[in-house]
Amino acid sequence: VTSVEIAGVTVEPGTRRNVSPTVSEAYTGDRTTLPMTVVNGVEDGPRLFVTAAIHGDELNGTAACGQLLELIDAEEMRGVLIVVPIANVLGAQVHSRYLPDRRDLNRSFPGTTSGSMASRLARLLMDQVVRGSDVGIDLHTAANRRTNAPQVRVDIADRRATELAMKFGAPFVLHGPPRPGSLRQVAGVEGVPVLTYEAGEILRFEDGAIETAVTGCERIMAELDMIDDAPDAGDVLYMATSRWMRAERGGLLSLHVHAGDRVEEGQELWTTLGALGAERATVVAQDNGIVIGATTLPLVSPGDAVVHLGMLDGGDPFEDDPSEEEHGS
Ligand SMILES: [Zn+2]
Image (cartoon, rainbow, N blue to C red; front, side, top):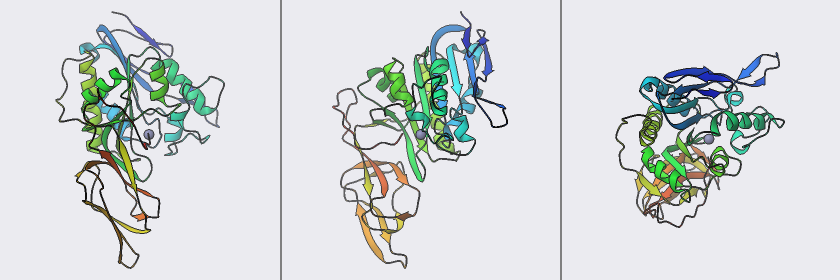
């Protein structure tokens, strides 16, 4: 059994330590740190990392990280768990998805030590967390003014990642090739499969989204034989494609469905009303599907994305020929 060293800190077998490497400096000159917890088990095994709030306003994963760490005991674990609850510490400070330099951390990987603020933070995460890990889980929510049903995004061209995505046990798995410069894409190129979990809204702690994240991480740890047991998962539905349904008429939005709902072809999804209450349009589903995401803003203009429908044509993720329209992680 071996000790591990992360950011210059040695973590002995059967113990956990908090590690806070310097990532930037405030205008006052104070150190800005990237807090993480490293749990080293009592037997050798895989190294798993869990990151949250790479988009600094996506906080469900941050709460999940805290709950996961309460459940995990170094003395009953194998391998190494690295948990980074607030990866974008600089954005989270100002409740922002982006860094103060207006860059998106999840488009800045692998980063450089001499680049922009985002690039430096990405590089630190690559060097200290991603490289040397066997698997990663990256926790997100929907973007501003949207909500997502709990789901894992994975590129089904990556068999190992797809197997793990199904084991995670969120109700939905969605095929999506990773965005260039994202943690998932760059880690994947370096041979570290990363699952992107999406659930709920920005700037909230939502119990269901958090619980599914925590139990999903436990199930991955059990799958990797890092822990003995994890809660059973419910059914996992795989979807190969998805489509945003957009408004054609402007007005006040009356949504008839919620994230997570199953809808049938012809079912009414939403009604757009004029400001004085007159019905302007009612939009119906053109296929059977799952509402995997929806707007939370009750005002719509033509072109606004209102309902994100996952298509129930997925079949078997290990046999499909993937194609994809629009994803936002
Ligand atoms: Zn995100």
